[in-house]
Image 1 (cartoon, rainbow, N blue to C red):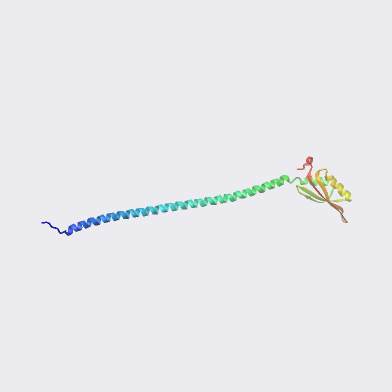
Image 2 (image 1 turned 30 degrees about the vertical axis):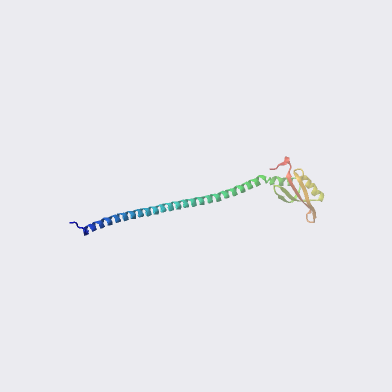
Length: 174
């Protein structure tokens, strides 16, 4: 006799097989999902930390570049100022020799303004002609000499202002 009715054992066996297969597939999918999520998370963390490290290094280098730029600007300013000072010292002439020459010519000096380009002196004389004579003594050494003003003052006598500039070629006092 053939028994067409399924026994409970057979049903339980088939259900256990089916359940085992579903659990295996589900576990495989879950493991694949967890591995992929972990990999993606790890990769994201790696890329983010690398980018942060690069940003910090770039900021550090940018700070160094800015500091170097400020230092270079300061050095350029100092070099320009040093060059101006050196030029001024080189071109200032010899005030001592110029003043000595003014006194040695016999001029009665009231005041004296010296600059490398031009000089001015206030002189005192007995007469207007005496002022002109004192001015003439300076033409031996300077290219441009002029009596700017001459006037009579009761307490000092004749006073004048001489402007002169440009040493002649054979009298370089520098």
